[in-house]
Amino acid sequence: MIEPNRHYTELQDSYFFLELSRRSEEYLTAHPGAHIYKLGIGDVSQPLCPAVIAALHEAVDDQSTMEHFHGYLLESGTQFLREAIAQHYARRGVTVAEDEVFISSGAGDELGEILDLFDPVSRALVIEPAYPAYVDTNIMSGREIVHLPAGRDCGFLPLPDGDLDADLIYICSPNNPTGAAFPREKLQAWVDFANRRGAVILFDAAYEAFIEDADVPHSIFEIPGAETCAIEICSLSKTAGFTGTRLGYTVLPKALKRGGMSLNAMWMRNRTTRTNGVSYILQKGAAAVFTPEGQRQIREQIAVYKHNAKTLMAALDKTGLWYCGGRNAPYLWMQCPDGMDSWSFFDLLLEKAQIVGTPGVGFGACGEGYFRFTIFGSPDDTQEAAKRLAELF
Ligand code: MLT
Image 1: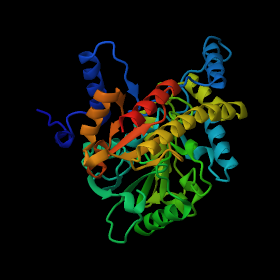
Image 2: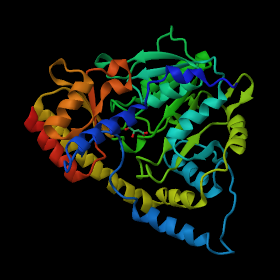
Image 3: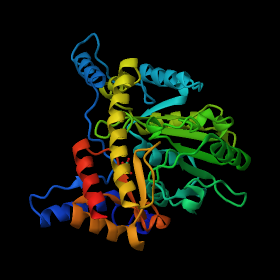
């Protein structure tokens, strides 16, 4: 009989965000007709922008004619989209070659699949609180995890210390869930550390479009030396509302080598075996995001979410509760009142104000006693939730 992968027994029974939906559904079943204000999972509420919709329609039409029809495409992505992304980096002063860009079906998928490149006996360092998939995917592949707890003392932005024994380093900046964002010099410290150790940084840049502060890099490749130690994983989910459409991209420099092997060449080899790529239609829609019109339209959408952030921050200011985030990232991270634990606060908010947020403990043990709000809700719901929050405290 074949043995199953027993590392699955080390996982929690259900994925954290699934548990969150389950508890919300349970509330709705017990309170038929109730409306809940969803500030929990970071799912967007605004539709795709007109430039993307027009490109998607056009791509569907292309697939209906002999002349413009596309069958199989390059597994790493179409040239037009990889070029558009490389040019997007160039406009920020970052040189990325088109064959260093890989199109994916989203950052969530890619964060798990990229682990194929590394020895399962390597050690993965996760700065916590953290997006739970970093831990789950490494458990599934049997990798040892080094948990690095971060707290208010360092603004949730710890620096590497010489004793850290890690081969793979997860950095999410701007951060999910805390909203903290690494300034240039702190990110440089991690890049130097990774290069010294021969480690690789998996840089999750899913929230870069929300950055406001000038000293916060949008890409790790703005940092000297990153091209020899980092892989950047990005997504259009939050940048352009693609959570239900699915498209992301990974930048893997050709200068990144370990054990004499090129990780870029290995990833190309992996992609050609593991996937037939992302559909032509979605890649056309994604390319529209990088046009001047697309960029203008997504900025307008992000402004809607930024307004939500201000609404929630004003409400939290009134409560006097401690919080951070909301400026460079689409998340607000607050301390639960009166020493409450995260799930008790979740229940209280749901029962008393019909607000669903995300318990901090779902992002690691050091998130206990904290709570996260997303700014991706509809403006009306966010406004009402903010009012209820302020009234409750
Ligand atoms: C979150 O709420 O943390 C994210 O939306 C989850 C995700 O991107 O998968």
